[in-house]
Image (cartoon, rainbow, N blue to C red):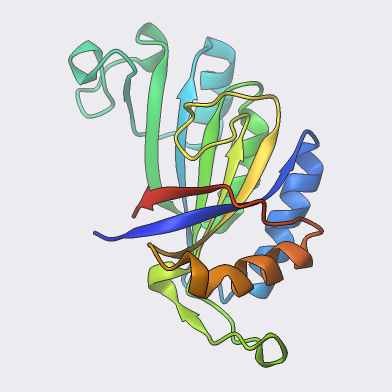
Amino acid sequence: MSNSDAAAILTTHDPALAIRAVRTLLGIADTTGAEVDFEAVIRSPEVLARVREVLPALKWSAAAGVEHGSSDAGDDPARCLPVRVFDWCHPLDLAEPFIASLGPDAAAVRFDLEAWPEVPEAGLERVSQKYAYLTLSVNSRDLYQDEPSDDHTVHVHVRYAALAEDTARIEWLADQVGGRFTGRVETAPL
């Protein structure tokens, strides 16, 4: 397991704008074999029901701890609310239905990409899968749902502790979606 740095490039109250930015970035990236991972905190039975329509085999544990319930134990998540979702390795086409199901609950939707492309005119080389990630924080400003918010943040991932070398890529990607890099970065274990 390695780490990356996740740089915030767009924060908006408009979920449609955040999703358009993600679509644009996915259009730039090499998505051959790409997957999407979901992490969330689900607090209400209504949101849980909608999420389970998208992910019927939902992987979760009680926010109070696995001893209070989990999907591995075969427990009913509706009896264990709030629950934390850690459900990974899904096809990209589940991302938008998952986001739509969340209502006000916080989540991180991480897109595991094949690569960020070479951009010769910007002096950028191809970046392989190890550092080709994109995360949309929904109803949260951070990757871990620790800063609940009524807005949404798009993060692009770069090499851990190599921010100075990767700032050009961050800024170029931000420009593609009408965002800007503010310097806000989080370490993301991958």
